Figure 1 (tube, rainbow, N blue to C red):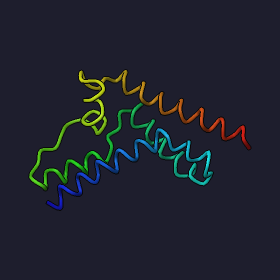
Figure 2 (tube, rainbow, N blue to C red; figure 1 turned 90 degrees about the vertical axis):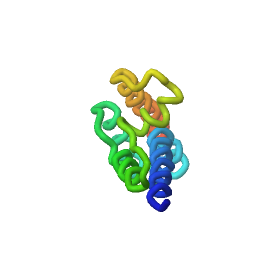
Figure 3 (cartoon, one colour; figure 1 turned 120 degrees about the vertical axis):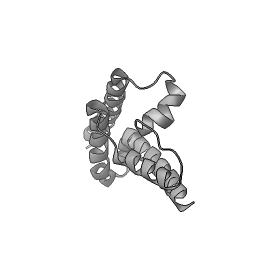
Figure 4 (cartoon, rainbow, N blue to C red; figure 1 turned 180 degrees about the vertical axis):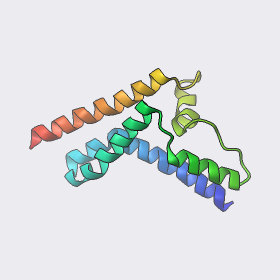
Length: 118
């Protein structure tokens, strides 16, 4: 039971991290110190998508699912939870590049605005 709760908590944390990567720059518009947390998170998010790096949170979630007696899953968090809703056919390298570009564009626009405000 505890391992399942940990795995589910990791899923929630993973989703929050992805949302922070995408939209954390908006927080930096209001609270500038957030940018020191957001910039490395956004860089990691872009790198994971562009270079197809494995995410440690997915590995940890699968580990705790196995310890809880559940099946893990292949692929990454986005493929398993998000893309199955949005893109039933699955994740392709082109989609991953698009997601990385989306993260980069959203955050570039936000930080350009932040720089202009200074």
